[in-house]
Image (cartoon, helix red, strand yellow):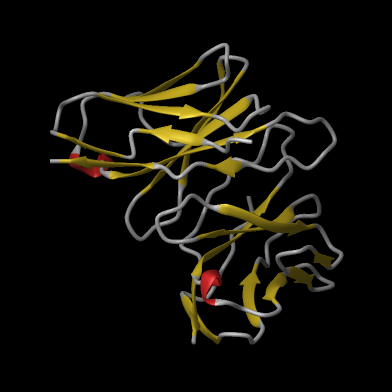
Length: 112
Length: 115
């Protein structure tokens, strides 16, 4: 699996957009980008995934660069409840469910 | 619709003891994966069970073993506990779906402390 690099921590003002970057320069053609988050004392929660096109759902948007070597997760209007550790993972899809290797992630603090 | 549940929520053991953790998957799911999360680190994949068989395994010693029951629930067993086994143990479930994106849903975890 391709390795990812994320900033250790980030701050964001409540109500503003949170943009979380992820570098995955060794990504291969059949690997997807997945984002999960983990709120304190809870299990990880799926956010979004993509291959090469930009994706949007009710939680977030995922922007993947044309060369696919990096991506950005966007929370359009961050709230205090979005304070969490965000994990970017690159993996080939698996019909049984991804068995991810989670890195340390980015600790996002949303400030009032 | 019940999500993934795990028991117990917290557990304290001493070195050398054995422990069993339990997981009930989300309703309708047939696959269970287990992860270990040490303090300050991301979860690490232990193994995955499907059709009562271990399908995949991460880089964990044989002291870690598991089981899946006909109702899809699962147990994680750890023998000869070490201090380094202290961690949050997470269970995740999914439904096998050929050709479709499969999402894993995580439970709240069991926090194990080994003294």
